[in-house]
Image (cartoon, rainbow, N blue to C red):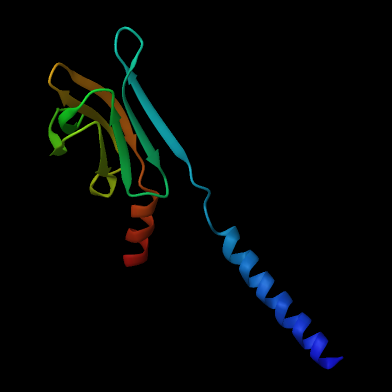
Amino acid sequence: MKKIILLFAIAMLGLSTFAQADTNKQPESVTKYITTFPNGEEAISITDRSASDNLKLASADDFYKYEILEPSNHELVHGSNNTGKVCDIDKSKLEDGTYTLKVYTDDFVITSDITISNPLQRERNSAVN
């Protein structure tokens, strides 16, 4: 009987510890930006998952580079060359805020405004301080 009570107590302690660990976890949020061509077809989409350090950029056409600019002065903040229709953008290199994204294809320059929110970066910074 003592073994059963002890086993039950250990199981309950384990469950309560597990339940407390899950309550601190923030649910993942997903933000998706879609920019369309004048005819209404999707030109680019940017998917931002709060639990990821990357934005996923997808284009209807192959693009050879993208640039992220400060909207107030159009200063280049981040950019990269690309081959294909998809790439990941490391958002941990960006401060929270609104930016202008330019995607360069052979025929177009597609422009979109995006808002960066880095909860993972803020958690890392607060852990360091």
